[in-house]
Image 1 (spheres, helix red, strand yellow):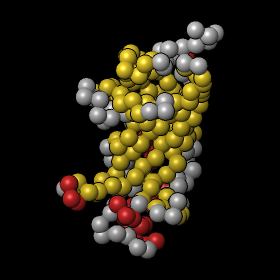
Image 2: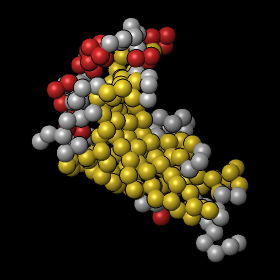
Image 3: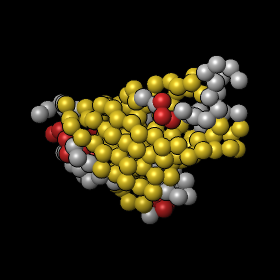
Image 4: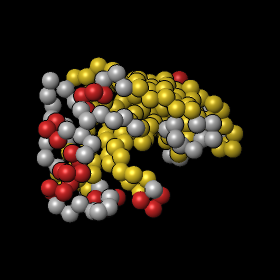
Length: 200
């Protein structure tokens, strides 16, 4: 075993380095899934020594149902989820492969313009570096100040499909206050993003 070698992921050494909060509007009529507003929170971590190399990691908590028309109301928001089946509903820890969490506790605190302090605690099974069949339950506790980047609207995910800027604005206005956002910008050629206005 070489110096600094770690066969079990060193979760206690993780230090959050960034991340983001975003919102998006989804629906799936085939599954009778109505159009809804969802929120995602992602933390990124500084690289840690794992096995014989340095690994970067991130933790995503997707598809949270917060009914906030005003993004500034994120202050004080919480999310708790237990997922004993490890289906990914309580979040996913990514280290080169997806590791579904089996519990998560998340809280959003103080705001500075469009940045928020996020505190997160999760429990996830992580494999040994030399044998991915052997896993150990790891507890990850982290906090970081991260930005709310905005609201995404993907026309291809909606029916009827919005085809104009006015249509996209109307879709967003169903769920958020457009006055708190700048005008929609094209994003990656297939979507739009409403970026927050940095107000009091």
